[in-house]
Image 1 (cartoon, helix red, strand yellow):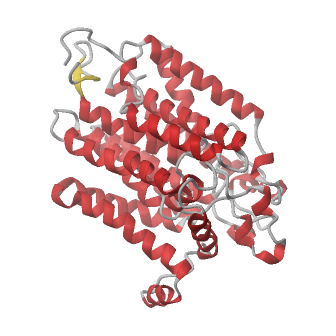
Image 2 (cartoon, one colour; image 1 turned 90 degrees about the horizontal axis):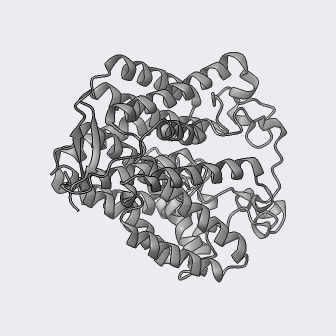
Image 3 (cartoon, helix red, strand yellow; image 1 turned 180 degrees about the vertical axis):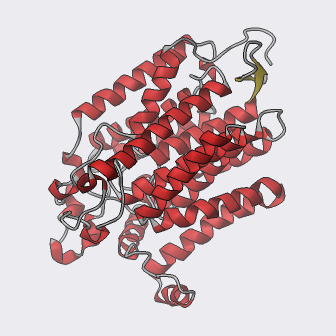
Length: 439
C-alpha cells in the first residue's frame, strides 16, 4: 500500500456506467442479429466500415481516457509502456512500407487504442465487489439477449440454410452474435466469469451463469470452443499447481500446435501423421489458407505486408478469379501468430510474443507472491490461456472489434496489476481495491 498519494480507481457514477457500456460494446455490439442471408461476400474488407461503430468506439475511448486521466491511478494505465511504444514504432514502420500505408497506419492506431482501453477498463471499478457485479450484469445481459434471440428471432439467431457464405451451418445457434464460432468463444469466456463468481462465494449467480453458457455453447456446434472449455480448465489447473513446467507448457505448447497445423499445410508427410492420429489433417479446410499465408510470410520476412493488410485486400479477394481457390478470399489467416508474421514480419511477431506470452508468464509468478485474491488471478489466467491457444487456429490478435482479443488484453493487464498492486479493504463493506504495491 502506498504511503503517499493513495491513488485510487476512478470513482463516481460515470465509472461503472462506462465499464458496463464498454464491455457491452464487445459482448453485444452495435449490430446484433445480423441477417447473414443478405450479406455480400465479394467485397474487400477495405471498402466495408461502419461510421456509427467508429463514432461509438471513439466516443467510448475518449470517455475512458478522460475518466481515467482524472483518477489518481492514471499512471497504472497501459503498463508496461516500453513494449507498447516499441510495437507502435515497428508496426508503424512496417505499415509505412506497405502498399496501402494510410489504411495500415489507421489500423495500427485503432489497435493501440484498444490496448490502452483494455488496461484503462480495469481502473474503473472502485472495488472487487463492483467489478464482479458489473461483470455479472454484462454477462447475464449477453446471455439473456442470446437466448431471447433463439426463442423470438430464430431466423436471425440460428444459422439458416439460406445464408450466403456458410449454409452448412444451418441449425447451429449463434444468438445475437455474427457467427456460431464467435458465439461459442463468447460462451467460453462467460463460463470463466461464472466460475470466478462461483469461486468467490457468489455460488448461485456463478452456477447459473456457467450452466446457461455451457448449454448455449453445446448448441453452437463450435467444436474448437467446446473442446477448449474443459481443456483450458485442465491446463489452468496444472499451470496453477506446478510452477516449474509453466514456461515449457506454454511456449512448447504454442510452438507444437503451430508446427502441427502449419506443418500440415506445407508437408504431405505431416498430414499423414496427423490423419493417423484420427485428426482432420485439413483442420476444417484451413490448410489451404495456411499454405498461402506461409508463402506470404516467407516472401516478406522482415517488414511483412503491412499491419492487417494482406487478407481481404482487393488484390487477394480478386486474385486469379474464382479459379484460384476460395482460400484467397479468406477473411484472415485463421492463425494469429502466422498473421503477425505476414503483416508485421518476424520482428513484429517477436514483439507480439513478448507482450502476449512472456510478460504474462512473468506477472503470474509475481502475482502469486502477493496477498491478492487468487480467484481474480485465476480468472485472468484462464482467459489468457484460452486467448493464446485459440490464436493457433483463429486470427484474434489486435482485432479491434473482437471480444476475445479485448478480454485477452484485459487479462494481460489484469495479471500485471495483480503482480504490481495489492488489495485494500473498504471499511464500509469490506470489499477490495487495487492500489500500487510501490511508488
